[in-house]
Length: 384
Ligand code: PLP
Image (tube, rainbow, N blue to C red; front, side):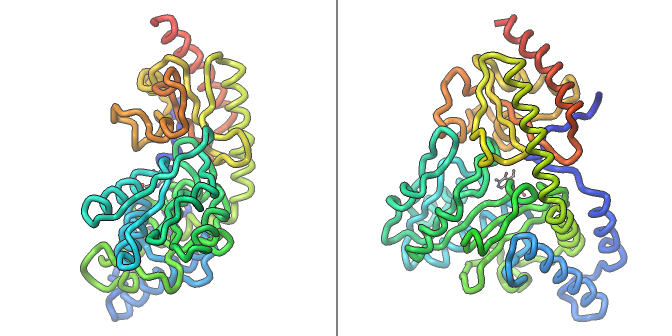
């Protein structure tokens, strides 16, 4: 077997239908959607249709609440910095969690360093859950924003966002959620969740890279983070990218249509993968919850007293793609902030591998990975 890909949390392949939908927007309907001529209007109309589809994908009633960005990172930056700056006269306190993606954590650090915000980082339990009661206690008079991710990219924990957002609402505080990993695996409904701001990224659900969206609830004020033209209703300057927006929309439509089927397939594959791991190996730990409160595609397994980089290197030699903890953390020598936050025992901390499933994966591939992984782990253990 070759090219076995278990790294869908890092990115996913684009679907043929998505590529096909995008193509005309490169050289046929290529005009700038801000131009008033007919060609420009055609591009603008495609952009607005795409906005409608993305709105439907996240349950937004009003397409104007969708702001296209260059991806999840920009959506998180715009949410955090844009809202904090807009509400800084009211207060300068933000609450987030210790296990957020760096796009959120580093935006918080920026606000602290350059604009004098205070940040409270909520801890999590051993499965990665934030406790709504702790959030309630952390709320202060000057809290202007709460940002807690919908699902974690490393260990797959799905947070009780509805409960957390209701704490924000009761206290008249804005609530942002990073739904970048959840989108395409879980049904997202901004109104049911009760959030004011929500980030998604197309390349995580078989759409193109370089495009994402931020849901901004009607009436929520944001200070734009890019200076320039008045695109995206003055919330995000820069010439719009209709091809990417159309691609994102097509991917969102397909994801929405196939959501139940895909989630149930991934759930079954994940169950099989995990059961095979535990019947093949001793001294392993599953990081993150073992329940329906885990992203269907996520498996994060820690091997005792082994080094994840060595395991990964050997998997790569066998043409198997996975990740250590998270793609964003791999390549850096530091231990994952998420695994530290769940208090993973020292002997497991450096040996965590994330396998993330996608539409193309099969049981046969899992069997193959298990066979190779057994050889690798036995060899690494014998070298100790
Ligand atoms: N937030 C989460 C939870 C992610 O997993 C990622 C990407 O890995 C991002 C944000 C960043 O998204 P993008 O790659 O589109 O910038």
